[in-house]
Image 1 (cartoon, rainbow, N blue to C red):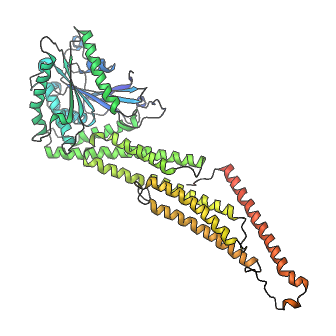
Image 2 (image 1 turned 60 degrees about the horizontal axis):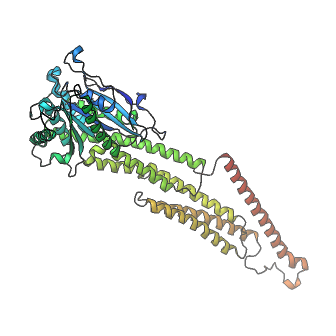
Length: 541
């Protein structure tokens, strides 16, 4: 399985401008194997190191990208990578995406006095976005804590630490140390590992500044000795293959789906803009100011993520409503559909905001997302459930009317028949609402109130139908208690027609009642046929 490079170019210029415009770069908008557009952040791998240390060349060897590399024979020893370059890779078989950041040398002397300011911004950006950090270091720099590579590493580690220093449980970032121009004869790999670990532990106090958090709690460190590519090409490619496998394993184990410009480019641009605006002073920020900036950036980033997630959730709700209108059925479990959209939205938020999982802002924003989905009266999922339940209630009322149309008011078994029909459809509605409510109890606090409202609507409608039919029977029938009414003369003095008059009148009224009920039944059936032809029965939102 080889990843395919979908797009590459410069993300951030040497002057600090964000070059990739969100929503306009169609190269990012590729489809996954399922045919759907990407919806989450990519997995990010960034490389840092000294200028001219072969970072771009290593990335090209690892991922078959085409980052610009230094040609010293033609241009001399000058900086090739300016700002941050990117390459977006996609693994078609798995639908995963990987974003590679080629970061300029963080110790560039060509920048002069502005180098420290830009270095700080880049380090902040890498610390926020990277899931894997590759440290590119020359073997002859190992043991020299003042080397430029280690200064760059300390800058990134310090900003990463500020992101998670308030948490108790840390997510470990993969730190891959690529030891360039490695020679087993001059220095065995175990000796170099030990020397690097000693250097890291010596540098760590300047990162944590008094905290008791150990480096192993934040980073999973792996070492790779890469021989000279010029003189030992076979061994170099073998070690690069091992390094690539480690990156791929971590990527595929934790990565989500393919990403689009509508998601991560917009968020990355907002993040870079905030970092640039709030660190415009050439003087480094104090610790308290930086901590405040961290929370502000997390809040901004999570807010943008929620906006994106809610856009996807509303689109799914709209599709669900359209599907219900086209193929309405009381058998649809809208609660299951709402739960599916809820779970997708929460998981998407947690993945996109995974770098801030231990920040208080992360939990607060997740609660805010839950409210947007379920709060009354504007929660999108709560509104979907409410409207569907009301339509099901109306359909149960129509079902009752259809069965009730042939029952005559005033007959001897009128009350018994009506109670049987009422119990039948009330039980059907109650069972449906009870099953749906059990699925939503933990997410929709007002579900019991909504259930009660639906049953109340049904009972009020059925009760009014029964009362109206009962009044019609009382008006139209000459007797309701089975005793003949007297019309002024004793029954013994009446003629045969006068004696039969109540019976004939009752038969006539019953026949008229029958015709009326039959006509009402035909009218209901005709209306249902028209509705089925024009538009299936369903919610008319």
